[in-house]
Every structure is written in C-alpha cells, then in structure tokens.
Image (tube, rainbow, N blue to C red; front, side, top):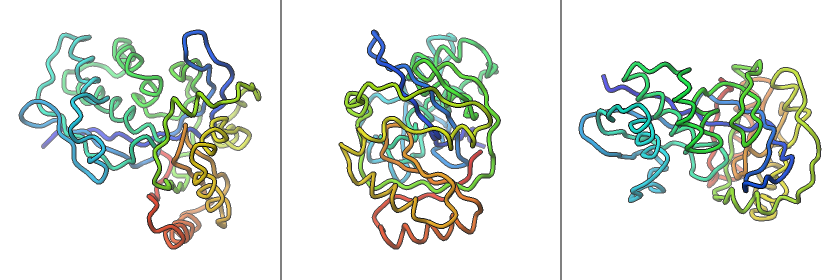
Length: 275
C-alpha cells in the first residue's frame, strides 16, 4: 500500500495580535485546533513532486512549495533521502486561513519521519517545522494547543473532539502579509485560560477587521453563518478568508450547510468536526 499521511485543516479558534516585533513578525496568542478533513500527502514510486485534487491548479507548475521545502529540509537535517515521489492531494482552498500549506508541510515531515523511523518528538523534526513557517510546528502535531511567539511556542489544551464544524470560503484569497500590514497595532488583551471552547468563546480574531477591509465578502460569510440556528461560535480563521461555525449538533450543522449552499452556491463549503 502507498504510505499516506493526512494534512488536516487548521483553525484559529481565537487569534490575538499583541504587538509588532523588531524582527518583522508579530507577537501572537492563538488557539489552534484541527478538523477531521483536509489534504493528504502520499509517498510513491519515482522522484519529485506531484499534485492532484480539486485545488491542484493553484500549485501546478510551481517548482517550489511547502511540501518540497519540507522534504528538502528533512533530507538535509537528517541526512536521509526522500525515498520516492511525494503526491499532494489538494482538497483545501489555497491562501484561505486554514493553514493548508503548513498542514501539507507538517504531514510531509510526519510521512518521512515514519518512513525512516524518526520519532515525532525528535527536536530536530520540530526545528525543521519551525524553519518552514510559523504555523508548521502546530500542524506537525495537529493537536489543540495555545500558540505564542510567532505561533511556534505550543502548549497543549483540552480540546473538544467531535464538535460539529462548518467551513465556508467565499472564493477569495487574502494575502496574510497584507492583512498583518493593515492591523491597527492595538493590543486588545491576552488569550483566556481553560479548555478550548471556553477560550474560543471569550476570544476574538484581531485580523478580522483588516481582512474585511481587503475582502468585504468575508463579512457576508460571517453574517450568513451567525444567522444559522444552533451556532455557538462563528469567526474567521487565521488571516482569512475562510470562516468557521461551531454547532450544538450535527443536524444544526447540516441545516446550516444547506442554507449556505442555497444562498451562495459558488462558495466552498465543508461539513466536518473538530479532531
């Protein structure tokens, strides 16, 4: 059988931006969570990189991406070969606030580590992830966690597996760098304490206002989600444009998904659960 590794979508259930740093990054406090669905990476015969799936077109023709960088970083760090062609099945929209590229990189590191017998808690594997991007360490472990610093300083948090989630993307890609550039610089306070859903409900996403200024349709997606019966929380993830809603039960999520698809048939919509 072809070795495969899931690359589950990342959600920022809350994202507090505290300050701009001298190194060009921002000091963050965020609550990472992951869902049961996303991309996958597989290791097959041959060499190089291939991509398929509904959102493959965005990566076709690219000679460099986070999957190829992750493979190269792993090979360099451990002195071990990439033992075949890595194929990415791209099911998540690109530049959508779901950490798709970071999740793909994390999955690639896990796939190669498993093949070569490298432990997931090997600090060199974390270093590989950290060098690839601020979200990649969280995506390497794909567990509910508080992230601080750039997002790479992780502390596990009690999650809420099985919580129904609806993901909606209104069909726009938003530049993370531009969203951060437009952040107003105001520190609105720290992330709360407790289990994941309590932290999320008491939190916020400080990148929503600048993202809405760039792509007002994100506001339409949020309004549509918040109007659905059974919603316990609706928020934008990351720097956008994907928005998520948490629900009391699967029936409420299914009804909301039907309503969203009827109102906006051109939007991407995924029914899933927290993992």
